[in-house]
Image 1 (cartoon, helix red, strand yellow):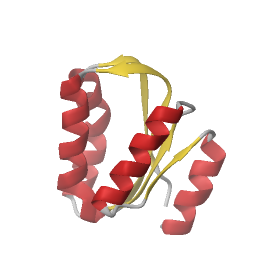
Image 2 (image 1 turned 120 degrees about the vertical axis):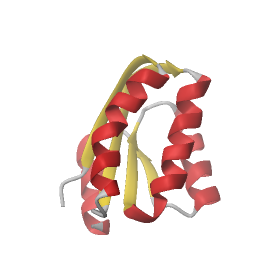
Image 3 (image 1 turned 60 degrees about the vertical axis):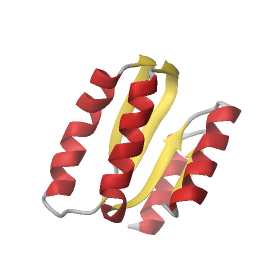
Amino acid sequence: MSPHVITLRGHLTLVALESELRPLSERLAKGEPATLVVDCLDMESYEVEARAAFIEFHKRWRPSLLGIAVLTRKVSWKGVVLAMAMASGTKMRAFDDPASARAWLSELA
């Protein structure tokens, strides 16, 4: 199973996040499980509303998301990913490079 990939750049707005997540939401609504790569390598910041929307997306689709790999080099965001994984029980990890992220997700699918 190939992971669904979303790419977030610059200052993430709610509109941009919803646009990126829409195709995956449609897939999950059909009952198809998925893995997800969230590429934040070029993302600088985000709106509070975008963060809240990602949390809600995660809550809604958690049973169907087999794993989430977040690409970031920011130490603070890696900590957030770890905290979210621990709090939710979701298989979620931060990675510096796409190859490592995809390798990890392939083990889960």
